[in-house]
Amino acid sequence: MVDTNLFSFGIVLLIWFAQCMHGTDAHALDGGTLRLNTFNGWKAFEVITQGDDPAGDGFSYSMLSTFDGVGAWLVDASTLRVLVNHETIDAAISEVNLDIVELQIATSGMIDSDNTGGGSFVDSARQAYDRWSNNGGDSWTNTSDTSNTSFSRFCSGQAYAPDTFGDDRGFVDEIYVTGEEGGDERLFALDSASRDLYQLSGTVGSAPGGTGGMPFDVWENAALLDTGEESHVALLLSPDGGSQRMQLYIGEKGKDASGSAASSFLSRNGLAFGSWYYLTASYPGLGNTNNGGFDTSIAAGVLTSSKLEDVDTSPSDPTQVVLGDQDSGVFIFDFDLVFGASFDSGASSFTITKISDTSGGANSLNNPDNVDWTDATTLAGTPYPDGIIFVNEDNGTGEIWRMEPDGTDQILIASTNVGEESSGILDISALVGYMPGSILMTNGQGSPSSLSVLINPEATETTEATPIPTMRWMGHAFLALLMILSSRGASPLWDWMRFVGLAMKSRSLTQDSRGSGSELSES
Image (cartoon, rainbow, N blue to C red; front, side, top):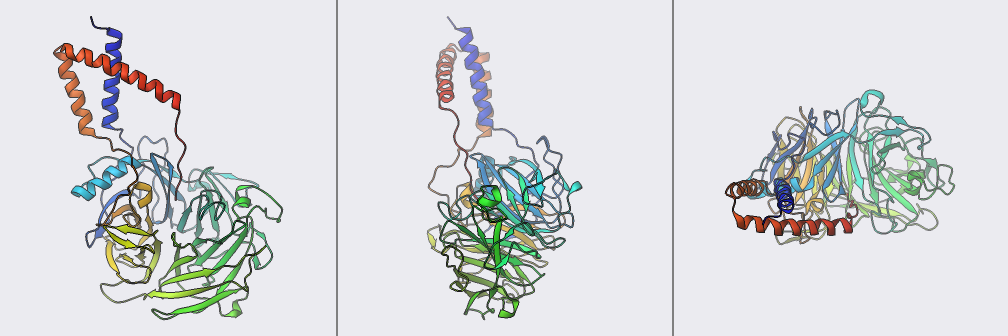
């Protein structure tokens, strides 16, 4: 005799299981028109485009124009959060949340069959901050769009993980650093956990040693350096125009703007009390290296260029930074920062090496702008012990190039097809289950602007377990089989359902007793 209650429970659970196998639809028309050309085996697909407002995400927010800098981290095991800067006169930073399993499915589909499969992977889009402060958090302005803010031309940006370079080294919290390339020329830090945006320029207190505070300038980006100790942070500051001089900020962790002990967000991250220095050096010729130091005076032969562009730290050696200079080429800095109780500017030094020219003519890298340096990696059996460098061009073709950190093995991987520069190159490989240098994101600044994924022909999955993709076709087939068998009244099905019902009920109780997992976070 059939236990009707258990039979019904089994039916419900089987339908639930089939729906889980089917997967849930996200809320965007992503995987749409691609605005990149790809070369040398690379593949690409679109993520989100200017004007997109994902339906049903609970936010009335359309993506602004002129995409530029980009950063990313894992909110949890299923969500990849991407921040997109908008280099507009009335600027903002957008937050785009992606379903990581669906993104992995789209990526695998492109690798295997040049097709994402049509599934949606964008869950939501909104402004990246709920409020901002221009006085270190003493007061706040609430905001959900640009109607009550006056930011200008957010350029490149960097997302940094807590304990960036090891326990208590680097930032304490997850932070996105970006600046204005115009307007009031301010540097900002975004607390990703609280969604609070802090102005740094003009609010950081004056520490002794260098020029006090955090400067104003026409900011392109800032690269965090490993100080080798736990009490300070160091940011290499690159202005695109303005002073035209490279600068180094040294912040003291655990102090407020007056220099007193404190534990606020800015204080614990070394962004409330600090000072800065000019870099003293001259550019070397291609393949050559020059030595440099630090000074507070511009009369000391400071490193100067009219088109200093993006900077990015080497993950495998975070005392090294790559610089793209649109007028001069691509350079590698190697810093030796000396600390005792404070920063010893006289004993500290750096070298600068030129690894690529700014213009090599047709079929070569020209007008370098945004840069990204990956961690050490092995792709398709080829080791890259120092990682790989990717470079966006700032010109009408917007070409994207990859090279080794000594400037060799330059390969064209993509270009824009809308007559504008490419921008905001970022390696997201480790966040989606691949070896560094496998999977990238980049922006195109044309009209319309768009964010795209780039896939290396040598993309290599990590050996770590990744989420199992949902299988839509299996869910449909399972539902169909269930309906057919039920309509025929097959008695063996009843026994099977009794078993499934009991097993799933037991599994549900076991899961409830375990609770949920901890939150993941990377950048």
